[in-house]
Image (tube, rainbow, N blue to C red; front, side, top):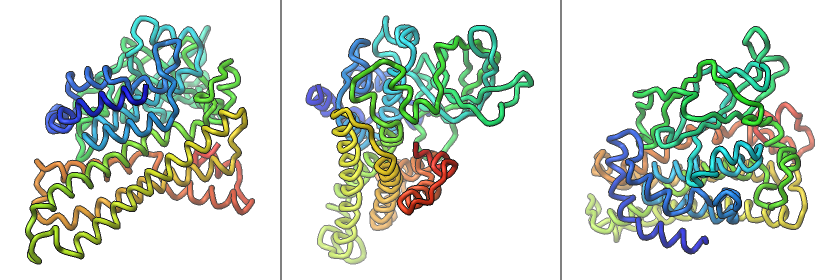
Length: 394
């Protein structure tokens, strides 16, 4: 299936590259782009077989995301952020999966996971209220998976905090138009959503801690290696793949531009300093890609053998997942400064890729300090549970 999906991506490469400006103008992906993205199959690569998915190797999915992002940042971002949701959904109640995919296996689910709302228990489920930001691709999704704290009778989160991931259909929430006015990733349409007094049946919820520590896989009754993977190896890397792919697209655009560019020192293609800087940047981007794929592949081999991924390996993978995109974006920044004043024009692909790559680092999964701190503390035997939870290393 991987080869077929990559052939489809290759066939729409010109289209994806050319529609990028229209996506920025609309503030979301054009409808035709969504139609083609659904048809190519990438969004079902982590989806269960029984619901029309492909259950591919996670690295196949990450490579597909990078390939798309290298053509258009925003389509690649949606491929990663929205395309990863079927993985967690596979761990939920069968009733929810049937609601989502039984009639249409191409159905999409938007997010975000940040607990920006409160779910108060009631008979048979919860009553949910809140406002969430950064719901990427939400205009094209008929479901949401979002984070929420469990609340008490007073509507405030209980102590100690309990976090749920909850799923709700389009009639139960409002998309806030004109809430995505940004300098980068403009075409992702990552708008705010509002939920007011929505009833959530218990089967449309899942304990976030169980998803992250692996208990949700055990309780799901599944045995496929894909769904035994640690959450930290799947969700954060889907976003990392988007950013690395964007950086690859920036590098490609810069190389094409530099072939004909003439600067103060003459033709750029014979300037040893320009070429040296680009070569170093290319190595950084490639190393970021290779490290991510190596780590995920190593973990997948382990779970395929029926073994649990140890905490130290998960921590190292999370550390590298953060570091890789930071390395790649730093590399494209070096390339951008060597592309001259023309690169500042907003209608150039170089400028678009550059803005989008830097914007991508603002996602919470790339918050580096707590992750580096916790991963090193774990190696030294002084990490606390609180430290690991803050770094999302579980």
